[in-house]
Length: 625
Image (cartoon, rainbow, N blue to C red; front, side):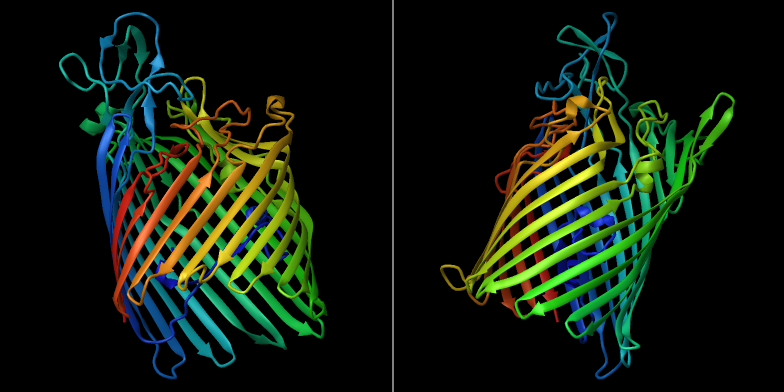
């Protein structure tokens, strides 16, 4: 929801080492600060992107474009400022999934050709179709207003975002002897009979709204900050046909309707210095609610909702208070102590389904828990150019509405009862992080060692079952231990003026230490966490008018399931990746920039269950006044 031109600063916090943040911070926090309107300005940006894509029997070029324009207004010496912008995005993306056959007994079958056999797939069955590319269109309107009220400042933000998705062009790979595509029934491939899964058509429409207020100023000698925001989806409907034939003929299907899911958040804090102490107190609160209904459709594309077949719903609420004290022990040594208490509730959980006796619902017992956690950090500048920091913390991350109540569907449209668990326990972690920095002028070296122990780790596993159907399930894992180290090198004007380099390399050993529900997983690397990960970038200011940059990202392959049996480099796996990007920019004036970039230059075919984009060409023009 934040445009690149509006971002002023990104603050990234690894781990729950500040009591200001709830337990979600055990996975890290990204805080984005947007630019306040400082003067009268206008800007426009246009992009065109092109991706030649080749995977299995799909060989197609996908493209798209985006356009963004806006401006800021701030009268001289006036207390009021305004920024507004509009962005339009349109793109066709590569297929994100493929359909496989299911083995069938001998008997009458249609002989087909064109099936794709990938021996590395999790399920050893031929592929007969690709999911439709997503024809995606988005429009976004943003508005920010600032008022200077003497010692106080008030900021407001409003964003309206629409998305329309059209996936009505699935690609059928197999054909009969007459060259006609085959989309259903029993087929024969190399003498083996198979049954074809349903290949649906789908469309979706969504409207999202974000509204927020921020108030800052002094109160009884304390610097106070109050943030209040609400994000909700005013519309979220997805339509899907029951089969390929129904998709073509506008036949039967189903409608999935989200009933205005929303997230309300309040953050308030007060800070003040007392001698060597920098005290902070605050409160954080949020409430998330979601409910979903699924209806039958006589006409999947435009028909009105028929009989309701499934529904889920639920809410969670979190209210927490924190206190933090940063103590300056001397000019080189400081100590930060923090504590927070959170009260969490899960309520109004319900699931329903259509049965022969009518529509039946089941409500779940409301839950509430209170937990306390602490954080301690020591910062020591022990010599010129040297700094060390040791941080200790505990955290509690409570389950979300989706994990507790929102189930997924099986291929027949019924609930997968294993996809949600209203009795999931919260995650509880113990974290330690040691950082050592060396500043050598234009070069900064950073090394860190970290340890995390998570009890009742929440894991959402997506994968294939024995029938080749993608299923999703949420579960607790008794104990996960993570030990890792990271090295970072940052250099400005390295070797020659204008050349900046940043490289980081991390090793993470995340082991499932205890898991009573699945003993076979004990000792395995936690799914989707690679042992090695690296990122790097190089930027060079060639002269006043030309800029060049390149970057890479790398990670080793990861386990795809808790058992550790699914490791590979194809659809359905979390694969190794090594991706290189580059960009060349021309600045004809101080107001304009034209750039050409290539993402994934080496065309690495990487996977995170679904495929990453292949080599993509990007042309961009920007103007600012």
